[in-house]
Image: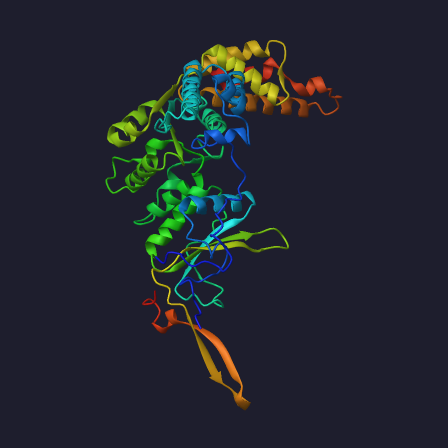
Length: 328
Length: 144
């Protein structure tokens, strides 16, 4: 390489290349710079929390999500570790950047995707990912159709997710043991490589049903050991599902009429015993159907002057019309 | 007359400076992304200043919004073409602008032979001058 020892006449030395990008505040390698620009380096947990506003996200998580006690506790633990790590780096105590890859297991409708989105926000506020973006993908987005198609496809997705969180839904589909020539293995290998080498650039969250994820990890021990946090999402109880239903109705400007809440509680009791119960998702579907029936009840009565109250209220009849009650 | 006193061609931004490190390139990429530009990578083995359109390495990266992915693409290009000129372009798609807003060289061949002046005798004792990159004396693919 030609070293540039040529100098312009008059120029003393080449001007240093300064990044025009806005200064992201005191970086870990320049703790002293805080006095000149940006907020001063935080010295206490409260200061880090205040600067990063991570408390807001944790509070939102508590408020917006019903139940999920073990998950919330684990997320608080992770956030605490990240905050303490931040303080440690400011004291010059280097700690390896923590492995933040996670695995969310749980039955359908237990809030895995919602929590993943919050996780992206928390990690972003704490500065462990550069953008708060969440790229959600499934097997189709990673695995190709023919030989040589998988690697570019996977790399394309990884490039897009860089600096944020990559959320792989139903991750167990990546590995298909029944077909030994399946291209999923190739995607897993590329994923593993990036998870190991570019920890600063990307956080991977895998999600799926508990039993299938367990078999997935058994056949891919390398994947299991690279994931530091395994979070299990418990099923919701009947009371929690009722709370979820109330919140969904509030958000859509509906409310239960007299006895409708009671009818819905009975409906949930029956529905939970049925196969393919999908927790919050089943609640949403049931409410959607009730809205449909409410609409056709109001529609049938052509000449009635409808008040806002009529339009808001879901009556017990709309819930009791469900086929669940008929068969019993 | 020396046509290439530094032994380095000077085109685009930062070309009078020493080579940018990956960290500096990342900072430039982030600056462009913050401005809303889309990055792309081009390479060539013909450094003639009028060679405006170089070969593209992959598609323009309209969909990437983080420097890590773009730098990864650049490193792929360096691996594929270690002894070509490689430059990063930032395209500003703002309506009415729609052109390259930043461009700088990020990879050079080990030796840069530079340019020669070609004099052409024209009618009535006129002389026409042009520059000719020595690199193009060799056939395509064997140039450095």
